[in-house]
Length: 119
Length: 110
Image (cartoon, rainbow over all chains, first blue to last red; front, side, top):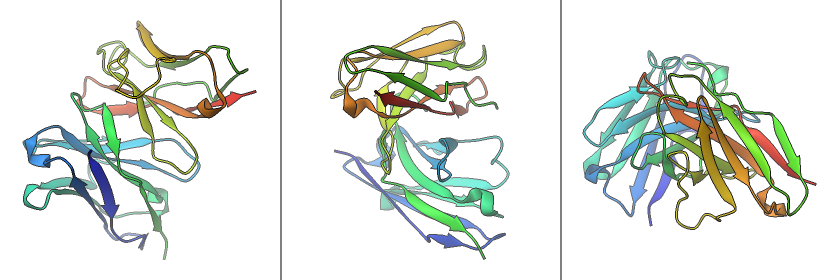
């Protein structure tokens, strides 16, 4: 059974960089599939942030691309999200996910972590 | 990229069938058979219900089914039950190698 767990600061100041890590257990992330991040502002819908394939290829939401970096650390079986120059609009629950077969088939999700951008 | 279009809400009585639509364009829903549907209960992470338009993951009730015609995908819930009350989101792969979600539909069981 695959389990994903997000970790990182719950509070980030405006203009700083949001950094989250997703630890994966039950499956070696180097073995395949897609690994990604999705966020959900409080009371609103889902927004895809980006995805990384186990080969290292990355795919980002065009609206966030200039500020986003997703990376894999296969030795630690984890992957990370960095979002720079954050504003209050980046306040959201951030989910890490696994994409099976296709980049859009998110079959496993972390529980989500709320990140608030505030001074 | 623009979000896929879903109705804000759909309702039905227990035992009835309801259908949620998800309209995109010829660059996403209409181009690939890579449409997924997710169910989200309050305070919980979304759950995959349908993938690649019509496929159900193991463990998902066969009361949930998916289809697609041109640029519109649909999720049908038959034999509606109280536990089906939740938000539902569609998503699609796009020709720009990105993923786009719908705005979400809240299903109310009357």
